[in-house]
Length: 257
Image 1 (tube, rainbow, N blue to C red):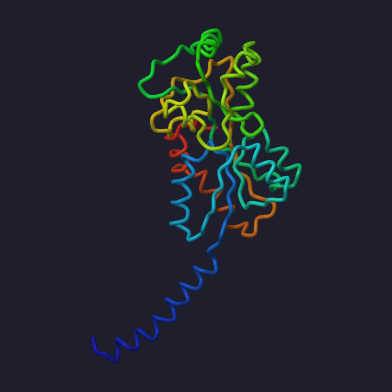
Image 2: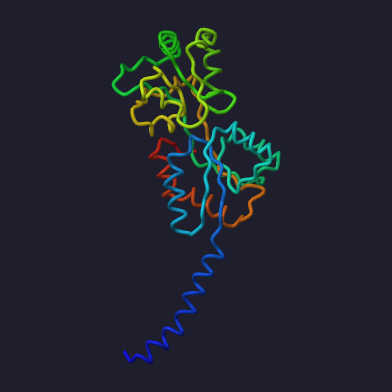
């Protein structure tokens, strides 16, 4: 190709390439996502995929739902929220999220974990669970003031009539995977949502709570009322509804809502 023609093509194409780059930068958005800790295993790959395919940049903060609600009450305004369905009405009533924007993404129950290699206790019935807990040297579950599973399990202990007996040997979790001390052999039994047990190396899921004591929690994604880039935030919520995303949720322990 003649050199003059090459130079002419460069002069024509370069502005177009620059224009495309500028256009991409203009449309790229910085999004803040606040998400319940139980959704972290599927969210991490889904966030990475969304960023790679769109150019949007997401900052995701994982915390127990109770903590997220307190942050919202203090004035925090994320672009996207992922919280348990039972608090959706409150989030909408307080105008922390766009009314009617909630989309369920997955459901999960609460499970019991022990250290890998340890004898697996009997949790097959409420009475079996009661006896297992009474025999245990130590247990851990999420602080009831902070997380969905902890609030429910505290009620389970009351229902089993052993709440006072369990106080001295209970360590309440704060944030994250509360069964990590179980994996290290520091605590004998851990109770948390199943999706927060499965990723912890060294911890083994014994099974779900007995059905009569179980709580199935559905998590929903909502568009933040103060979202600065609503189209990008809405696109991310749609991303969480794709068949591929549903598959990721299922592979990490969630059920279809």
